[in-house]
Length: 294
Ligand SMILES: CC(C)(COP(=O)(O)OP(=O)(O)OC[C@H]1O[C@@H](n2cnc3c(N)ncnc32)[C@H](O)[C@@H]1OP(=O)(O)O)[C@@H](O)C(=O)NCCC(=O)NCCSC(=O)C[C@H](O)C(=O)O
Ligand SMILES: [Mg+2]
Image (cartoon, rainbow, N blue to C red; front, side):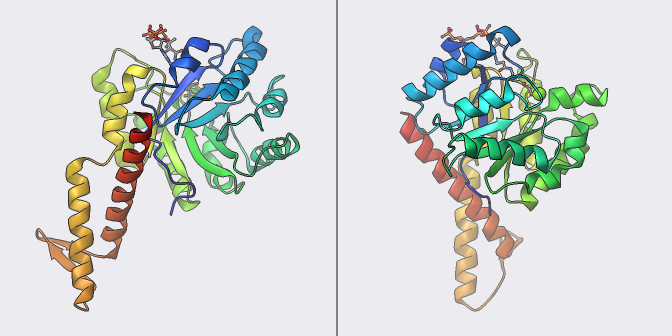
């Protein structure tokens, strides 16, 4: 069972230096917004971006969208000040970049606590360096505050000296290792960004591949990709209807003292019921989120 389960089909990055984007986030159909202080922000605008995000959080208006702030690394000149300013500013989670060990997570958590972070403030980790991927299990188990791993496939491809390819073979092992680590620790996990904004077909294929690999959703860089992402990572109406049929057929079998049933020629066991219940719960959570956004 996932800790802190909620829809994370679409997580849209926006630079903290872009106040227009921070404002637009209040009306975009994203499950989560990542207000960025790291790579999307130039060094000489870091302090202003931090102030913009604190002000945006104070002003509120983001509804039920999950609000995540990506801080700079603790090895940079800005990381500690980011955590000090954001720990109690009202975000749902802080996203730590380039995490490579449990110790890095725990150091950030200690700073968050010192800065007055509420117990509800979550931690997310960017998985985007070779060492971080190799230590995914250690990182995913580093703190009770951890809710979600976020793939950073751009940095990863760079560090691997690999290439962005349509099938993503160069990063498949890394993606799957992180999915394994996330699930082993009951965490959510979200796929990396697609950099080519004019490649709608390739983007859709990567969404589908991510869903098939087990990801809960995808990180995004532009609002025009939200609709496709939300569609792919949501259970379809047919899937939800089939999930209800599976739950009902199995319940009827159990009432007759049987543990399994054959539905449409396919075996249905308890594990299928668990998956069906997960689909129904996700569909309900999405409906709630979308009703709230109207
Ligand atoms: C890529 C962009 C710079 C493009 O911006 P722009 O030229 O303004 O795009 P449009 O003119 O098409 O924008 C249309 C309207 O949409 C708003 N907009 C655009 N992008 C966003 C956004 N991300 N969030 C919110 N709103 C957005 C524009 O303001 C326009 O609105 P309006 O004025 O009403 O018409 C830009 O999309 C952008 O900056 N994207 C985010 C880039 C980013 O955050 N990058 C860092 C994260 S990715 C990363 O770091 C990867 C990871 O770490 C790894 O290693 O893999
Ligand atoms: Mg990165």
